[in-house]
Amino acid sequence: MTDNVALSALDWWAEAGVDTLADDSPRDWLAAAPVSAAAEASMVEVLPVLPTPATPVTLPETLQTFRAFLLADPAVPGPANARIDAAGDPASGIVVVVDMPEAEDRASGNLLSGDVGALFDRMLGAIKLDRTQVYLIPFSPARPTSGRLSEIQINALRPLLLHHLGLAAPRKLLLLGDAPVQALLGQPAAKARDTEHAVSIGGSSVPAIATIHPRLVSMKREWRPLIWADLQRFEKL
Image (cartoon, rainbow, N blue to C red; front, side):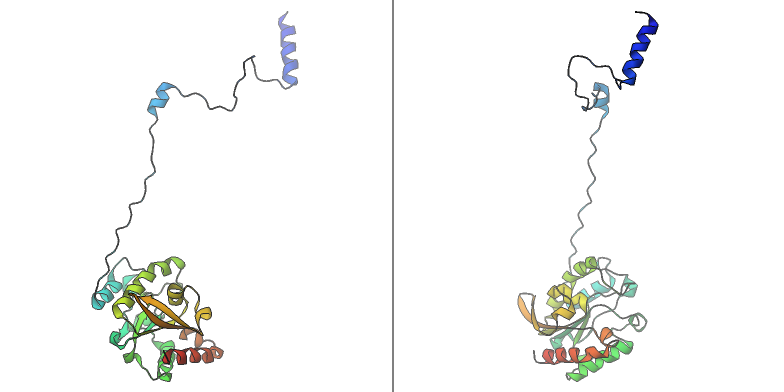
């Protein structure tokens, strides 16, 4: 066979789509290419680096030291220079939990200042109480820039609130706003209100009422009858 004839035959097979030499023995075309001994020896198994588990934080066992912890410890969500302390009388047995400080509170250094605070004072007055007769706790000592607490923040703050309540040993609870209600009752305030709940604190069952935050009531006057009904229910606990 001349070279021209041979090349012509090869061209015919190429046009027919045959572009790979084959033999009579079966071959696994999908198998990985064999690795030489030298290449195999050079391979080093790289294990993923797992994060070191965080050391559990030991929470202070007295109310005074725990309040200082909430204001300064980096384990608490929120910048330390924006945190607001609890206020009032822990011995009263009446604990009010708000979701977070108001925007004005950072300047005053006190919880519930300004117009929202004035409405809160009227709410307490309607059930024959004032700030000196309750213990007022911020669920989050610092106010987030967004003005809302994320689910991650709520989950991080929940054990801190339970510890705080365990030290304060309340006789009854008033929960204002979605975040503390969600943390303790597992539902938003609008759904949890209008009924009495029980919160387990330190092995005791403490009656609790959830209601709308005065911040929202100040924007929607039509909600005032709802919060008034909740306050009357709380007064009777």
